Length: 145
Image 1 (tube, one colour):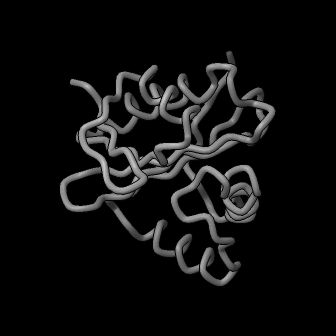
Image 2 (cartoon, rainbow, N blue to C red):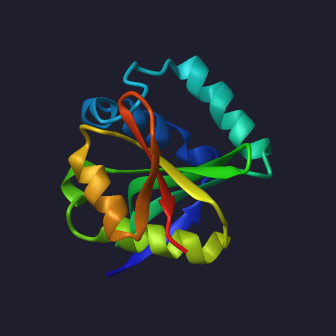
């Protein structure tokens, strides 16, 4: 499996914008609203300046197929991962997350997953995450030590 994580750069902004705003990603996201290009540009600019966030494009056979990123919130590193639909359920996301964890050596990785998003729940369980807590419609998942 030829997977590479490439640090996000300015040229990736449109790819990230399009993937995040795709209907299938918004459907399983906590924030389902479409992000404006202006909002995305501000977010992307802040991402590049934030030394506590990590953002990578997932390349598979030299094609951009997804992203994986974190940002610091309190003592937690909130993680988000998304893949283009045709590359899901092929263990690419799982391998990408393991590469990411090794590459960044981050502690306290936390994922917020909608309770109705069974595929993401199973994905994070398969990567040794567990449900630490829950809010109204969200599971808060942590990486097992």
